Image 1 (cartoon, rainbow, N blue to C red):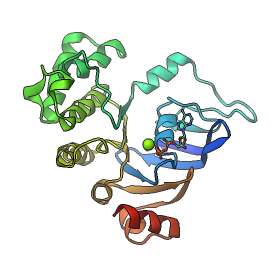
Image 2 (cartoon, helix red, strand yellow; image 1 turned 120 degrees about the vertical axis):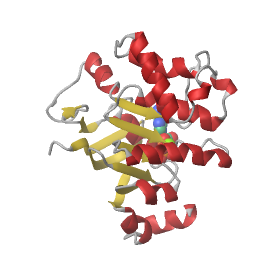
Image 3 (spheres, rainbow, N blue to C red; image 1 turned 180 degrees about the vertical axis):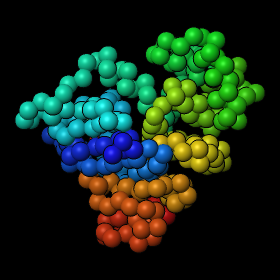
Image 4 (cartoon, rainbow, N blue to C red; image 1 turned 135 degrees about the vertical axis):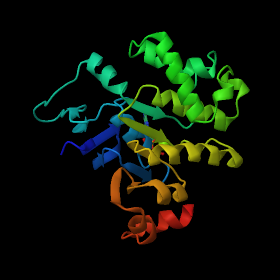
Length: 254
Ligand code: ADP
Ligand code: MG
């Protein structure tokens, strides 16, 4: 099973009294695109954050590329990672947020080259060359010296994608990457994501862009109230959903 990049097993996560993930099982194979859809509050962001170890799971476990990230709290502890291991693993997972989260005081080039130097210890010159190549790949070669405030939302999000790729991630997580954008800027970001899918990047994309799901997803996952209600290829889940809750969600977003 060496081609399983992400293996989420029976993951539970609560905040106070509210159980936000209620036994989630999900596998993502290397080179595959998983698109997660579901209503607001269903636990989509929490699922991504547990995969990236920004949140600890309460029960169940998560492994990335065969390495265990989570641990069981009830019952026998399987494995608890040291903070250093968590940080090392996290640097191999790219995360693209809804609100870009660029460093406002750094240029586009410095935003992209910062983490390879500070988190991976790569030589600055090498990181700068890589950053320039990545900005070219997202169509921003001519904006490398711009600061975030001088860029449109679509351009900022493309810088954020280049920044995520600079860590040479095994896996890239996208949390509603186009939700904060004006409608006319959505497509330039979707184009970059489509390109990554074509290049075989392993990704989990949370989005309400059903058209994107249809185009790039190997697996569409419908999450509702902390559980995966159904998952499968786009033509199955989006066109012939088996569950009433999936049908009613799709009728609201389409
Ligand atoms: P989605 O991304 O699908 O909209 P989230 O994973 O953000 O859903 O949130 C699921 C539920 O968990 C929501 O009710 C939210 O308010 C709650 N929640 C998320 N993060 C926290 C947190 N850090 N503390 C308390 N509650 C949280
Ligand atoms: Mg969310």
